[in-house]
Length: 283
Ligand code: AMP
Image 1 (cartoon, helix red, strand yellow):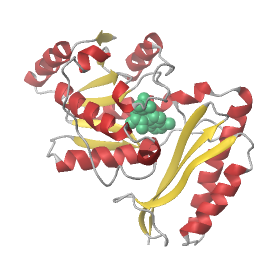
Image 2 (image 1 turned 120 degrees about the horizontal axis):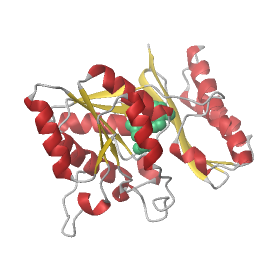
Image 3 (image 1 turned 60 degrees about the vertical axis):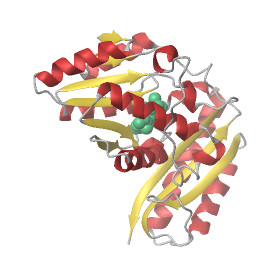
Image 4 (image 1 turned 90 degrees about the vertical axis):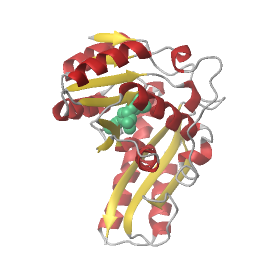
């Protein structure tokens, strides 16, 4: 597996591929790859001639009290997985390669980012938008792949690409889960055995909320309250938010209709802040 750490190496390779008329797929990640990431890479390989995966734990999207230093890393295992999935190139830069000393330009957003994770992680989406913009400029892909696991991020990136006229197709991919339902996440490794057991309550509440709406419930508060009760029944959980929003605006709704996103963020055992969600089109 070819792993490069400089912008120039990526540019030279991508230019050579484009000269041959080949299409480029791109999967941005923070590494410690699991089957969720693998599903994005696989999809990208099936829809493009060449696939670039970036592995970069982006300091700019972490708040001062968040888990930047402890975020798990394993480049060897990641390379193996990328190779198996059929990716061609890993871009693994050091922070200094991405942000030199004089760095002072940012991509920011109003509206979509003033809700859900944007409220508890105030610098997060500015960091995400800035780094994804930079990565898009470096890799110049035809298509880029993002997981619905991070539904707000997916909506933010789609909006940014539209607003800034970027010539890149954004492809959303379904959430991949563990056998018991817990959404796969690099952060699941933070959980102790007991917290891991209790963490299944997140997906259980997601499945229950979805079923309530499928069965006809249209009152958002009723669904949210039932989900909160379920999550609170596990002793180690601390809810950050349980919200139902319009997927296009990220604004809370009272009556469930249209394209909705039901999203949750829950701290488990004081060890990991985990997120999960479902999206639905309701007539
Ligand atoms: P991360 O490395 O956590 O920044 O994630 C990189 C990409 O993988 C993002 O687009 C995520 O939404 C996606 N991803 C992470 N976990 C999952 C999952 N369980 N299912 C599908 N996509 C995922």
